[in-house]
Image (cartoon, rainbow, N blue to C red; front, side, top):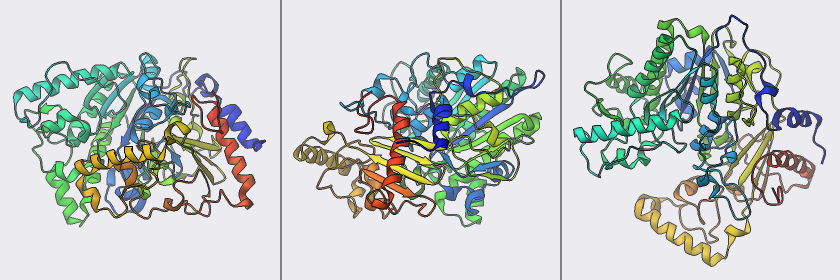
Length: 555
């Protein structure tokens, strides 16, 4: 099938495994200083937790940045769980390009890549911070990593029930921080501090000491120390500021804790004066009558406010690009799917005098576009062998409304999807023969998983939609027959996509059906549109590793 001319232009000039030599244009004059870049990435943040979106949660510092910059209504992630989303933001690549043995071991026998919480960087791989560092930037990291490769210190791990006030626990945690920092420096960061290797609740050593907690002051202080260091060295900087908020554990449980307790060990004194106290957060939330589900957003907002205050104190706000990005969407239980609620991320760009204030952009962009955009703004051309799937959005964020892409691509588990600028969306879901096996085998595997889930999470049995699937089907992420607890929770309520979740082909007109309630793929009136969208998907697949059923039968 012949693609529309606009799509041909995009695929020929935008997707064909771009190196930035082809897309970057000089951003700076001879005497201009490269812009500083602060990339704020939050974790599992719902739209209701951002005041500039629905006005219900008071996040004044974040709101001021959003209203003072450019909001993107159609910023998509390439995969709607945190690890691959972060991989793409730091590499400019789709996560299916990950070349680690751990990632490739999860490919199916047919060669289908299964993107989940599994992508990672290989030794020597080019990354956004590494390229910027080579170009003279000071690059820094604070907060949550969760991309693999954050190695712990050697020695005795923390045992269950450990006392967080025990000096031996603090010594162990500080050694872990040093080891984490060394690991992240290998991925291009000159400075790495205040590190969570992954989610707090998934870290056994933190959990064993009761330190699987949020600590916004600790992370924020690390970010400010890095900014001060960059200014002292008179270098432009890139800061990857990655919060654990507002993911689980419940932030409300962390707020009343001793503020000296951190994932890096016991502090001599609490961090005070940097941002409002935790008591103040609680008082504001209670005074406003806010549900506890959004209290963490107030705490996060205070940290963002402290960062901005430091920029103003140092007189560098006007030459600092701030990007605010939620690692994926959280609406309609769509995390872990290729539906809009999981793919569309609240995102804005802020830089006084460069990004037009008070503007909203509906053009398509993706998280793979961050790296080429930052390179473009910095006037940096990455190495010729650095494969980049994104395109620079510099023209958009500086006021040119001309679209930079005609489509987006997403991948997760056994699903693949494309959305085009005209508002059409196609999702393919293919379970290969090697996973189907026999029904008896799948039912046996499902039974083992059900027993494990009910043993570890007995409350799951109270969910009326939870019982075993009589067909032991694979869900979109294809983690196990019948679905893991995470996967089954996606269908625990009457989400808009529930009736067609297991359909092989799904076609939606987002202009008329933004919540993807009606699958048009089997309607003969849309046969031509379906074929057109499949052709768009095939073009993406042809440029990426792996196979994908009949849409890409061979490498």
